[in-house]
Image (cartoon, one colour):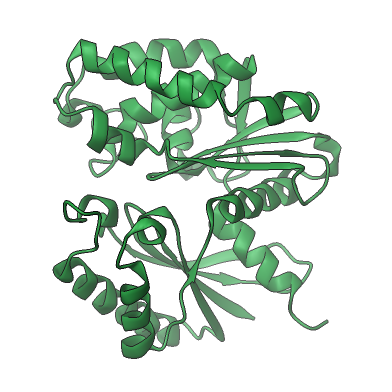
Length: 309
């Protein structure tokens, strides 16, 4: 059957159409997205402004028309931290339901971590043993560790690359003092939450997911996307130290010239690199493998699991 999943993230709204069946490998068939930049369009109280809500509703209606054109049988949609934390998030969700018929599923941070972990487990399989998954999003950082498909520990922290850039890195390029302050803040915030991950057991494989991690790996020399999802990709701890220094000396336009870095995400790459570097240092991890699947695929897999046999 054809499934359509609409992902309303901090940066983009993305419809992914997949050909899938229960127990099978979901195959991407069509993609349709826009850079709504929801998290950057909030007013001073953190509310979604009316113009952004208008664009969201319009694009979701467009997604439904595209899904129909693509022969999609089942469409579902979810939202993450930007809408979850907005004081008027419920109003926006109600408007989406009323005007498009889409019933948005607003995920908790822990659910984001759990579903991303499921995707990574299915991709790498049982032979990977205990997994530790690190997912740097626009609004939050998710961490999960476990031996099964359900993690033993699932954490979500407000350390997303976009959030940290907006709140703590104003310059382009940023001031060196601001970079040092952000580095300290990230490490202190992470260190306070590390105990559950350190006590649950040492991981056999550490994995990074989502766009920020893929871009950092690409800067470090990982294979480009055009070579396909099955080419092994990884990111080393030593690589990150050098990448942080490079990004700190660059403005957004210069970062956008780096391999794997889009113009829309260039500004937040330094914050993402600082979070990744801190996570690997504090967890004493020398290398992470990059998984092409993340939250969106985890939700697709869970949806397929729930279908009647």
